[in-house]
Image (cartoon, rainbow over all chains, first blue to last red; front, side):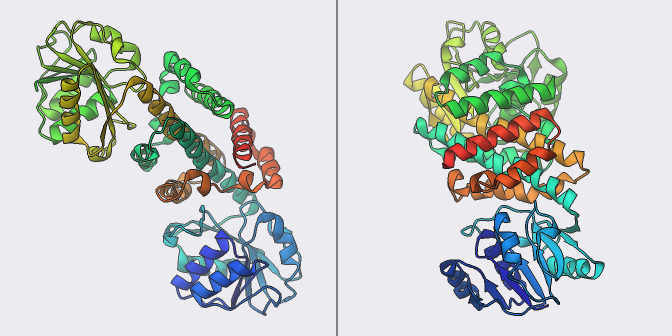
Length: 249
Length: 249
């Protein structure tokens, strides 16, 4: 299937890389950001353009959610299949007389970070079964973990991911502010963080809970509140502890 | 050094195991919970007691914070060194005419989960340099990562750990509630969670942030709020997003 990837951000970069690693040809990468497109084009030896979108059988739109609709209007090829990569957009956001689909990789992507694509779950949706099957097969070349999923389900997958990834990373960032404030090396906490995650490979997160709130240790909770000088830290501290207490009461 | 470990919970269990794995002899394990002591005693072939605390050179008190003071009063041996394992207690909580210390392993412990003890940071404090040196050497047999740390520093280490471990695990538990509510297999999210943590081995957590809040994607934030039916989930969702926005504004 002749394929064009639209976008030059983290998701586009890693899709291109995953495709190339698995010998799936990419006909063109297309987008607005010439500098980023040039980098990807050079690294993977793929033609790019900022203004001339080539003809293809499949277009994968890997741009920010807010840009998907506008970008989708650039595709005039009515014989094409067009898929977006968003967890929180319906297929109908795609505006054109082509066949519509969604091709959603559940992962957090940073350009500088290598990934094992075989483990990434892909969630596929298409307007017809033939397209669904072909996208399923395409994703299956990259990943061992491919499912079909409609928009309703995809929205909840994305919401869960925000809790389990985006919020978790933010806690790491806030934790680092605390350790930085005392000149503590954040590397002290890496084995703890690794183990926190390793645990939930084997235990239900609810059963793996430790810490003062689940023990009901009010002395430590009060001690910590006295240590915290940052208003945002205190809000997080209090809300998370209240939530833990409620879960186990 | 003839050593007794007091306690039969998660920390006591793993200290006993770490000591045994490194051929450090334990003279006795002592505590209130006979069933748990018996299990540890049987697994590691160490005498236990619930009422007859033997004489030893070193007592390590690995019980819950709220029990440390009372337990410390049971030790009548004035020639002993007594260390607690708490991140949030001063040495002075120990009530007896013996030499006092702290022996704090920074990790989250569950009995059913194996651990690589060599990676666990230990933070040591003692009233005199000789005791500090001997506890440092003891911890160094178990771990490659031993530091001295006074109470002020230890409190902040513990506070950071609560954000980076206890709160993170709670987010996993809340995320699982969301995925369970839609019959989504939580295993879908394991590669995402693994990568979220793998990233901060290489990137500053602040630079690794992804998700709708850091992108300022108000449409997705609103969409998610409409999906959330649980009051606790909504409070966490809103507070974490506000905190992310403030960090990057």
